[in-house]
Length: 540
Figure (tube, rainbow, N blue to C red):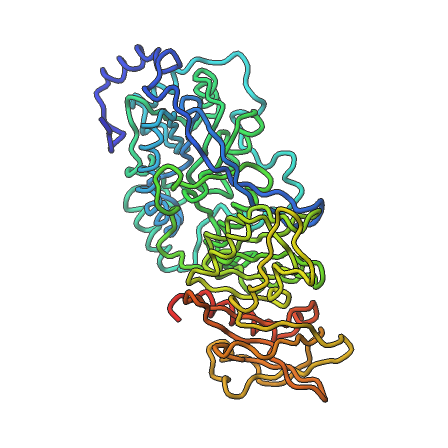
């Protein structure tokens, strides 16, 4: 029996459960005692020391269900911020469905709505928690908030910390606070219980906001693996006595349910990104310095949870070349131009072997691929990821050396690796043969006949000079649409930016521009921004 309303149960039943619950502390287990649950733990590791670049990878892991706990952090019925409350309401049904499956698989569920225990005084799950056997020893600070742990100092926290409201709409927020007063709630601390859509099973679940009590539960039930879900990932999820930091310090194997969490962040504050991009930045921080993450679809199937108003396209920026510093210029461009409105994933070549690209399989999740790779050959399964993406209807944007990303000059690939010399023609409609000398400076201008192309609308019309050698790419495929061209005195003009529709229907944009000085030029920044926006739209 599930009990949506956790505030009612006859006291005599509570007492009977509290006095007769010895089996709950490890003597008795569910039918799933021996079951292993397969997770894909996503984490990030620095490409090279002090590089500031990270590989994002997934590792399969099996956790015994009977030795795994889920801690549901601060999923309150009300929050001081109107928009935060709305997002928790939206999270609730998906979280409840995930918890139900986890429970059925034999995972221990601990509900931890902080400062709400008085509402659950007579609830059997609350009494079960207070009756858990006390331990002889406890980790240091087990009942205290934790601001940071060793290892986090490597990077400053990625967003401005806030414990207030997100007042993007002051009138809306004022109305919300007035409504809280009418409900006889303190607008600064309006929570009274957990969100009602998250069911608390009185026969199996646990209810506590005490780090000591949670340690009693984890120790008495031999729970070595802990999954933390709820809000807020930049605050309580990390800092509570039962949060990620304390669990990691105590030696537990911790994971964060990344798609069933949220941040408390005002987009008017640093780093001035959308709310959802701020959540991504915090998730990156967690994966780099604190714990791996999982997603709810790993138990529920389908796609990971996504807020209805999160319409950002997902960009995979793949960087693996050693000539033009795009490992520096592209991330900087992305932070300044794209981070606010896009979901960004970075993939880099291995620092010691450019023919290895850890985490490359994750580009399949993206809506658009931004490619800056030069003369790499890959294992068959990694190269196939790129072939599959190119065969889809998703957009591809290529920068400079992308037209010879996976081809070698007059040599065969090393043993066990594969090349893709046809990429230039098949993906970009190009015909790269070589380039002019760097001493010949090309003047760049818009192609007159295509000035009304969506990518060129709003771009400065004046000519300018590129910073690198002009590529020889003529003639292009007849289906290519030339947007910009470069001219060197005494030589035929060459296309430097164009679009192309691939055989499978996907859209491609390519530019042979992209040396470091180009990224400093406003017209190139406008061009690349517009090309990415065009490529990310699936309706064109």
